[in-house]
Length: 425
Image 1 (spheres, rainbow, N blue to C red):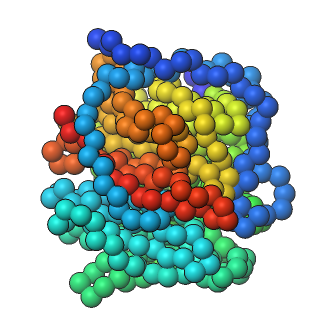
Image 2: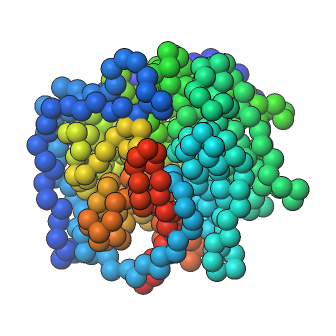
């Protein structure tokens, strides 16, 4: 099928308390065009950026399987606040905990929740921050947010770190994930059963660094940062960290050098890296989840032209990765104000898969059935400029919850309105 490489990286293991379709199918994927450049630097950096390679141009992409119109939920939409690049989680009581930010030299990070119906917004921190960000809940329901802080009004290679914001009874507790280099980009976060956070982030090769994907956590109360073995990686294509049922972390990410989706997992011998998908320019904006049996599932994007490509789904079965194409996106913009988390994957209590994906025009919600993927347009295509980011969560009652932002301005900086929606039968 596809090549699998296993690389072991020595990292001491610490004992931690981790605890039958009648809809309309999508059209066939478009023919690949000449490769783009993805700017993505904030601010601009020297050197060439990631381009679509020959593998993407020459690959034959199978037709997507989704049937749009097979789902007809009614979506109740709320405005959360003015901002961009949001993240959220739903607690057991159905309350949405949302984080979002403004990207400016005097910007901020904000938190909102809708316990009383409407969203109440508060400021977590002020400064020069950059998204995407991520949010997870502690076992007691406290929000924990990961974000990147430039630590100055201009980008300084000697500064810049990931910050973890934890809401406690006494307010927001901020922990800097201090490490050499200007790192902490493309954050993703997971929290274990003991309340310990685990994050993945990028130390960007655009800035001359070589570690790429880095993993951070607390060990005996001390922040520890280690590379997972990805080698040099550009930021802007995302990371996705999750804990398997035993509490061990894994990260899905895009290797821009080889243009492939990779999966790093922490085992007894340290971090190991394997190739999930090297068919085409595969792996941008990955979203990783585990099922109850401990098998990983990943949604991601396969770029085929400057603006178009295929949303693909991969899962591990009998120690081998399987893939299938789900749907297409035709109006994607990459770079500094462009796409970030364009796919989001969730598994409900019954083990059913749910998927959301988006570009500048479309926002799709889908469920996997015995006959393939059934989907629905949540936003009328072309009715508004979307921010090219979506988050999906499944409530305790099985209802899907979506979070995205509308892009109201892209110059001189990206500005938007964060929206939250619940789908009802």
